Length: 70
Image 1: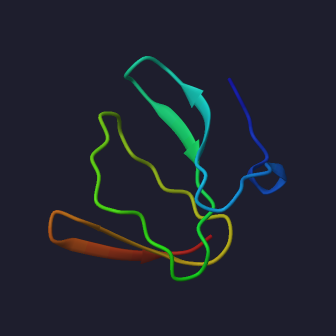
Image 2 (image 1 turned 90 degrees about the horizontal axis):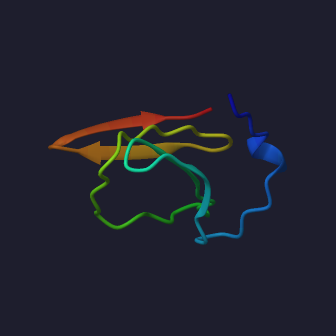
Image 3 (image 1 turned 45 degrees about the horizontal axis):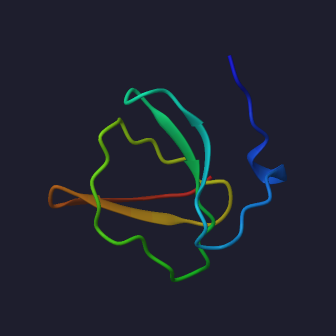
């Protein structure tokens, strides 16, 4: 089992950091977005999980939208 302290990772804004990848099964990617920034529409081949460390996020997919925070 792996463990990361997300608050302690040095991630530059808009420069995703892959911290784990399991051959098409799953990837763990850390993304630092500044307030008001957005990811463009894209598809992932693995399951997607969103963990918010600080701030808030709006996630939209398949015509549905959800807001979340830490």
